[in-house]
Image 1 (cartoon, rainbow, N blue to C red):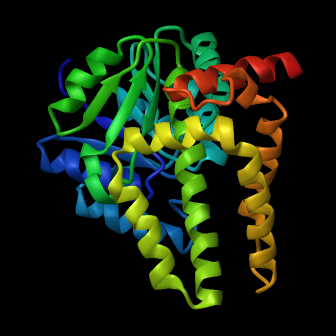
Image 2: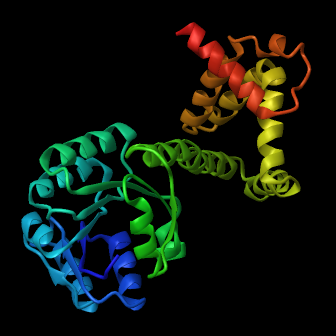
Length: 301
């Protein structure tokens, strides 16, 4: 794929970081459009960052589309569909639109269908960023799917990207991101609730130490397997423990939303009588537990 101008739809911190690294790696031309280009105080950073990269600022989605054969969309999830609709009618024939936004598979599929209807020659690609851009910058893992994804990977990898192509239709890569976020955003909220409670009881050092010990004494695979396989057998007992946990937090006036949700999840899974499925013996692999839950949940629905 020959070099051409790359456009950024949305020019926040993540987009600026990617653009900066592309330029540093040798990309010659970048054009950016952000709907806040003339809205204070956001426009100050947009203009300053564009000047740092000698990037051209477009003043409309149509101007961005006319100036770039590859447009990378990096806006907020709530704005992703609106952003696509604003530029799709103007995208050049045989151009690429890479939707890097943290949107649901349904939203990505809707955007893909709209692009196909508006201009079938435009290649819409579903991309998702699997990590913190602030840490690994342009080398942050990216999952990409859609037609000609391999061609885009080959082009962008020349500038330091870390792209894995997922076979499938747009929306499939986003599904990985959304499911991953169940854990990543969940553990983030759990840390907040845990440390808030530890602070209230003045046991932060001890609480963190015992959690750290658990995580560091096992590999990730071992921890995953241990927690899920024993859940099948000990879920009911742990449900009772969570009731005590909630009482402990509320005694100090701690918001216990995460703990309450955990209790509800335990109540939900224990309805499936998982222990009976495995003759009250801990199964060897977590996949068998998830298969049992999946089938039981389908039957309940």
